[in-house]
Amino acid sequence: MTPRTAADLPPSDPAAAGCGADAAIALPGRGEVPVRIYGRGQRTAGGGTPLVLHFHGGAFVSGCLESGALVPRLLEGAGAVTVSLAYPLAPAHPFPEGIETGFAALEWLYKQRTKLAGRGARIFLAGEEAGGNIAAAVAVMARDRGHPPLAGQILLSPMLDPCTGTASLREATCDSVRCKWSDGWMAYLRGPRDAEHPYAVPGASSRLADIAPTLVLAGEGDPMRDEAQVYAERLRAAGVPVQWNLIPEAAGWQPAKTLGDMASEPCACGIAVQAHLRGFFAQTAAPPPA
Image: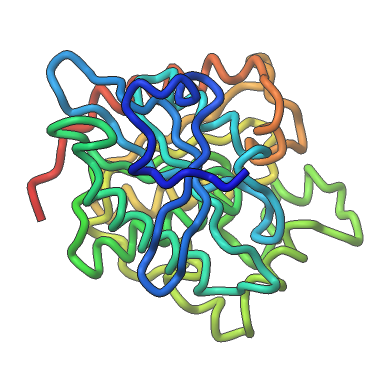
């Protein structure tokens, strides 16, 4: 069945509750891109509903709206309207195709913010694993291009270090000969020079000031734990308001798993993650108009 466009979905569409509503959005120069909308039509009493653009995980080369459904559901449960984007994947679409599509979708989201989430909607980015890299890159792009104004970004086990040599990743993979994250980076980056680009590797950017307030989450035994923590510390040192939290394995986090791996099935850690999401939304004020 051909997906409807986002404009075709009324606020009361029952498909928007829990499982999301599939649609397609028209982006300039990119045709129609599939999305899944969660929480459409919900409003907060005082306005300012969080409106989130979400990017799924999959090491840049895999993943889809279905495999990345858990995080949008957690965001919806935390009070947000969420648009999950099926961005183009490597190796067929290497850097910068994914982030340029992501930024175009962010511009679309900003224009549709009142229709999607009501007056005063606050715009956020979110992503897990490789999607966390895309979200972080789009946040840097929004700062550099001066639009649209972001209330915050949410990075869950973000994939930020192409060197794939951190202690947490070695512990999780047991120094295996093959590493899906290393393979993913090789497919995503067109060459060594891309690893120096702040949009391809936002974790290595030399200028991080004035990026939107950030929530960073990872698990104690997470392969992405160390690079997530380093990025949080670098953002804080640049003056960016940052919340950095480790989800304990006692909360249901499985060693050697990222949220990207776990996004296709419910997990006990979702309760802890959702609590952090609610707290971040409650503490993040709307930015001034661009």
